[in-house]
Amino acid sequence: MLVFFWTSLLLLSIVAVHLAHLYLLAAGAIVRRRTPLSPSYGHRFAILIPAHNEEQVIRRTLEEMQRLRYPRHLYDVYAVADHCTDRTAVEAENGGAICFERQEGLCGSKAAALAWLLARVRATDTHYDAYVVFDADTHVDNRFLDSMDAALSAGHQVIQGQHCIRNPQDGPYPALAAVMMILDNLFQNQGRSNLGGSAKLMGDSVCFRAEILEHFAWAGDSLTEDYELRFRLLLEGIRIHYLPEAVGRGEAPVTWADARRQRARWLVGTRQARRRYAWPLLRAFLRQPAFALFDGFLQTVLLPYSLLVILTGLLWVVNVALAFVTSLGPALPVAWSVALFLLALYPCLGLISAQAPRWAYRALAFGPFFILWRSGMDLLVRLGLKTATWVRTPRRGEAGR
Image (cartoon, rainbow, N blue to C red):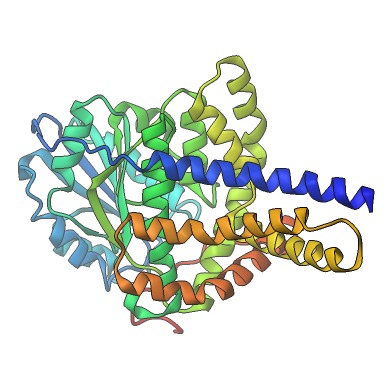
């Protein structure tokens, strides 16, 4: 029993480190730092949109971008119709974009498509101060570029806007995805930015100063290009600033089957990136201590929230059961109960702090199923029993096709 006591205490200490990191970021988000919206209109933007068989959604996205408040002569919209077999290129041009069609190279890679498009844009005679990346289905707030212009004028080099889910009403998974995005925006991004860390790259609604993106671009073979790019930027001392005033709204998968394919790709890609960058980030932190580097390192070694909840719950059951049949006493079961309570409280605090609508709280009813579902996939990936390739996620109305 003494061995069990010390083992349980060690595991509890590891969980405590996870909780400390989660609540540190949550505390960092208490103060809502805002970038004053005073655009100078001193930056010229190139908007980049990768699209694979997106004929149903891309025209509306592009038409919205033609109506941004930012002076129209100071931004251009480019799209790449990547290995498309439908009318994506035609719809993109009808929506006002300068569209390039790509048939060569790796198919099904957003990173490769963006890198290819960036090369074509750089070959034009137009000088751009910054690049903005959107997905083909993103609905953009009309002051998006105004906000990015102000942030660039303030000296920021890479700026992540507030990426939201616009279809939470479409089912349990979209609702949960919207809740996760609320928590990510507030705690993971706002909290990190306020504490001097580097926000997450969300894959959409992100702005790069031109020389930064032209130097780093994307790794064409990456399953999670934005996750990996964040680590590469961190190693070069470049932090990602979070800008909640710049809002882009995308779609979440409607069915669990579509979500599973998307999530499997993400889990495999992030696992590869974590293994690749954990030691370089730690080494960089030891050479030059900084919160952003240490936080980046922690992200490569700490367990995801879902898996942490499952393991904490199992260990709570074991400790409570043993407390009834041994003389270990109540201390460990109480400590594990507190840990489990704090994990359950975390998303609730996020929704309260974000003043989330009622549907977000109702979505938490599906939380236990989602945690089991996601943890199962995570374990399969960690054990090397699940692989993934890029698969286009169906849009609304296409699910199940």
